[in-house]
Length: 309
Image (cartoon, rainbow, N blue to C red; front, side, top):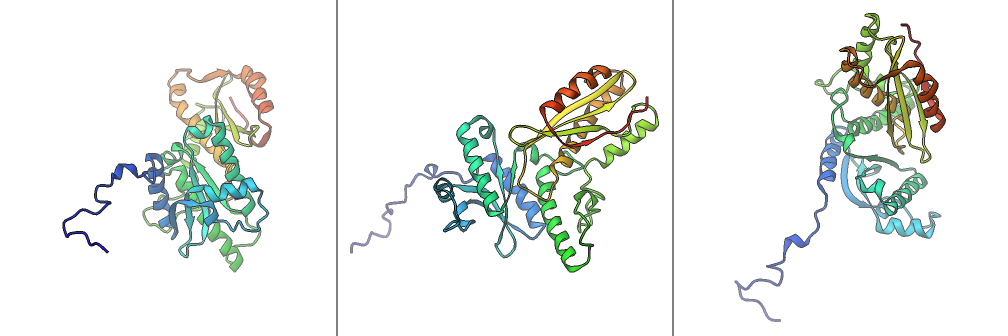
């Protein structure tokens, strides 16, 4: 066997590192950092780019050939495990391509089906989930904290510390164990609700809280119309949406109505200053716009507050 001289370069000495793929793109990197931060505070671990076949026991699992093949060649963007490396749930960052590409939508459907088959939680996020716009929280943190709160709640019920018939509701979480955390951080619209009640008592708006209609579209995603009667002639309304998640710890109907409330509240300053802005005629709203929305998106949840003007 021939030994290379001491200073002779090895065959790989001039390998171009630019030929290697970056493991995460920028959006995935931001998601990973945020996800790691919230998971570590809950004693969990995050792993990027984990193959589905390394998470699911696919042998003799009854999968179709298409689903079996997809498991072997596809990965989760991020897998969250407990401290003992047992899979808990996965997170996918969905960029614009996930809506624009029919091929990508089909892949997403396959992954959704597999998570359903194996009872595995899946959270799909985009850039809107990473902005701390809700009482200092971002939606990624909200969802992940809800997951771990729900697990702790379930354990407390099993031990008898909480009545077995008491439902889990993240808005009832008073604070985390972190002494620096805000009180009632998980009731996202608490501050807005208090401000609207004050405006109502001052007779500046006609309702103490917005009404809403939450329905679903043809793909099962949630669509919400929220409205606030301002005076005898005018209504302020907004619409928003949220894709359906395989994440049982969060009630999407409640959450999407809270997000709509934030959108509504952002419109209020211009309305109260005398600029009509997004206001519309009250009769037209109740006779045309709201019925059209209700017909297009069959109701799954609704709340109505009577207006006094």
